[in-house]
Amino acid sequence: MPEFVWQAAKADGSVREGKVSAASREAVSRQLLGQGLTPLKVVEAAAPDAGRIAPVSATSKSTAFRGRDKGINSTDIRLLTTELAVMLRAGLPLDHALRVLIGMASRPSVGALLNDIFKSVKAGRGLSQALAPHRALFGDFYINMLRSGEAGGQLAEVLDRLAEHLERIRALRESVISAFIYPAILVFVAVISVILMLGVVVPQFETLFSDLGDALPAPTRIIVAAGHFFSDWWWAMMLAAAVLIPALRRWLATPAGRAWRDNSLLKLPILGAVAQKYEATRFTRSMGTLLGNGVPIVTALRIAADTMSNYRLHAAMEGVIPAIKQGGRLAEALQATGLFTPLALNMVRLGEETGRLDAMLLELARVQDGEVETGIKRLIALLEPLLILILGAAIASIIVAILLGILSVNELAG
Image 1 (cartoon, rainbow, N blue to C red):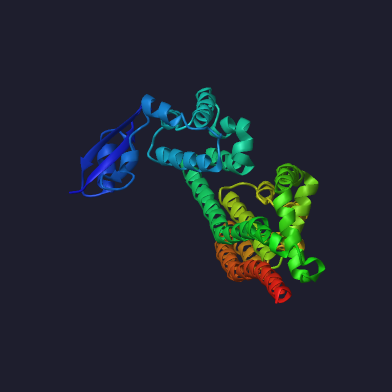
Image 2 (image 1 turned 120 degrees about the vertical axis):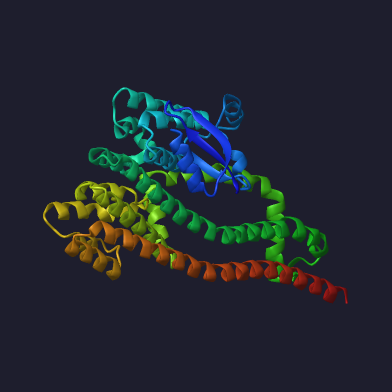
């Protein structure tokens, strides 16, 4: 029988680990539960991550803390949610589960956050109340989901839904980022190649061309002047970039900068449509998850709209809540925003008519996921050859200009 490495929590919140032979991972979990232990992780001994399953001791924790701690990020929130859901679903009390997570914390910032939450829970507050001071990290969506789960006595189930929601958002975001890595590399190579040719290669021919003066072809004169500019003023351009880029980032963080950036993004061909579909997907998934967990529709609308990061699209949703408060239908209110396709509106309308709005919104989010991925693939299919052509044209123009200058020198010498 295969061997499995396991990690489990005791009733007092301490963590144990060991190795056992069993027919399956489920059999290991049953054995641990029979011993009064709550399984946290069960990994086959031959698996690549088996060596990382041991609990965090004082020594290992201090070693992990030596790295630079950049604070809490979305990955930390997602992992904490998943691990807490597993422990609560296995029957571990909330305070004990938090104590286990504190012992497993890999960075001081994570440990400090969990310790603060643990103290609030031990003082008699609910988990949603304990997270309220950390609203900037978790957001209204997360806290309202927990509040509804506590009211219905389904905290473990709600944490499972939150973990699934966060994982889907992460997967969608990662697919978008991954799709643009290759085009970004192409742009970087293009810029570096042109700079090297203008700043290093072209100046090598300047002495050869210096005697021709006005007899030099116009393309060659332009390229030589550009090369001379790059070789003489590269330091000024780097200094200007070091000043302007941070200033531009600060301006883009202002409301006016965000509005300009988001409006410009939506006006781009193909990319604008993909960005709008991506934001609509985040809205529908958040809305469906909230409604499915019993959050009132007006509150769900406000929270789901806040998940939309595009300033212009978020502003377009401002009229939806007043329309719902006046007794309007959600499908008609969303149609007035102009952000949703006829298919999306028909699915929302069907959900309202059948009383399954939450399920239809989640199904719509899955459909839109596929449309976003298809749109990204179509955009990349057009962008990659376009970037290659631009790069080739830029380098070819420099080479042709140099060759024209060489031919002019040969004609003059002849």
